[in-house]
Image (cartoon, rainbow, N blue to C red; front, side, top):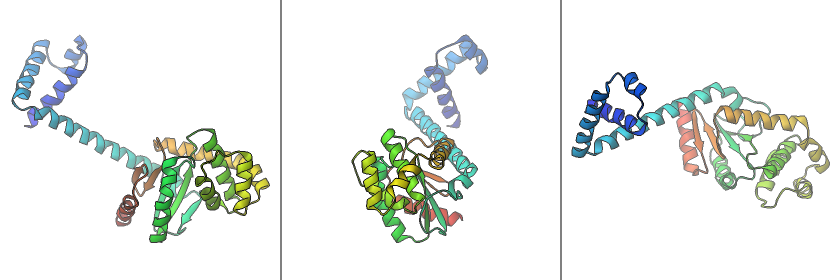
Length: 249
């Protein structure tokens, strides 16, 4: 069966790829041998069509395992930047035994959908330390809100500004940002100045660079332990990942 599997993989590759004289030579088979192998596999597939399906299933599983290993390696390489950056905004328990890192865009509807689940998680599990990585990936409005939220951090109002802006569907005009800052007890004039400062710009670039290193390709993305969880997942999925991380620690 192993031999049939290997032959099926070989035939799948040569049937999909264009025929080229060099390819036959490089494979170690003569054109006649290559033709005979194809005929053997074609006959086998007529007898049992599941051979090729099983072969592709095994290849997909192998690809998934390799991608998972690559993800774990990338997370390990960026561990300090993920969990030990003193400039990162933190929610939950600052001394928690498990750190959850969220890459998010404040204008992302899926990120906004996760807010109740995250709040519930932090209320339920007091051992979770949540680190936010703001990455404005959805255009100018996202960049404006990200700047406002990070600028609010300088006044100790990161979470207040985040909650206010992410619950507001309106576009973030200067007037809207001013009024929102004032409504949550922040100095709107100072906030406007900090929004355009180098510290905020540098933090955004730092987050984006880290996201690229981890191959983050959308929001939200959660990193828990050595696992990466994409999308607006159920609270139970985060809880399972946190439990798994605790077992490994």
